[in-house]
Amino acid sequence: MIKILVVDDSAFMRKAISMMLERDPEIRVIDTARDGLEAVEKVKRLDPDVVTMDVEMPNLDGISALKQIMREHPCPVLMISSLTKEGAQATIEALGAGAVDFIPKQLSYVSLDIARIENELIQKIKSIARSRFRLFRRDVPKTTPAPVSPGLPRLSKKDYRIVTIGVSTGGPFALQQVVPGLPADLPVPVVIVQHMPPHFTRSMAERLNTMSALEVREAEDGMELTPGTITIAQGGKHLVLQGRAGRIIARTPDEPSASLHRPCVDILFESANQLFAGQILSVVMTGMGKDGLEGARAIKRSGGTVFAQDEETSVVYGMPKAVAEAGIADAILPLDQIAPAITRTLNGAVTRTPLSPFVACRQSG
Image (cartoon, rainbow, N blue to C red):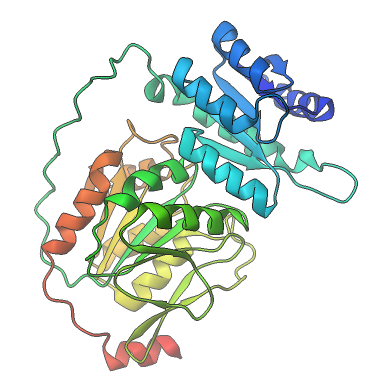
């Protein structure tokens, strides 16, 4: 049984979330809290498996409560955030302070259409609860030395043209470990799909930009991708790469609208593979489901390189597990080794060549 503490200043929201969660026989809401002060006290007393936390509350807001919980009694916290620019900025701050992920509220003019998030909320809670003891073990001393950097397998030298990264649940925290570790002279562009709704990807890009030696920005249609830049797919839009006159251009289509995720990792990976077959370094990181598996498979089949995050450091070992179990990962790496592995691999690459006129013409149609 997964024990949940629901924290929200709205009695309606506390009741709605509790009823939603308890429809699942594996979940029990052990208590609720009206503000951050109650939340901190009840987390220490009840030791829940997962906490759902509203961002905006009186007395002690969600971010301040989260920071106190992480100091005094660390446990997985899932933020509940409004779909506004301000809500997105606060949520990204919370994810930087230790929240494992978030669920957006669906707002209408007169009510909260909270039922729309039911399936996603239950799935995330179950996945996060399974990783609780791995990620929030209190028996591990804080002075535990960092693991020795594992050696990469011997990779043949490639003419890498781009790095593609796919990530979902737990991704904002993971990206805040990887992106700042990439050097300013990285010789190729980096493109990232993080499963997020609109507003949130822009706020995340702005936050990462303050932490990175590279320029981090949200994708815009027609944007050129160049070395020294990291481009994050826009929430609610796919990210597709196109070659034009020797340049790499970002496209942000709505289609295919039937895909499970928008943005979709598979769609990014497959478009990159069409443009740069055999010249891609791809990374699949923490997240639920299997998005990225087929795209990574295509990249590997074409001669590219595929890294996957390991289970121990993944908030949810779904997406990277699918890649690892398919046998297509060249390396399975802990979170703190992903940026060094990307850098070492690119530094060992052969001299890059311009996009061929044939490929440029073919991809620009």
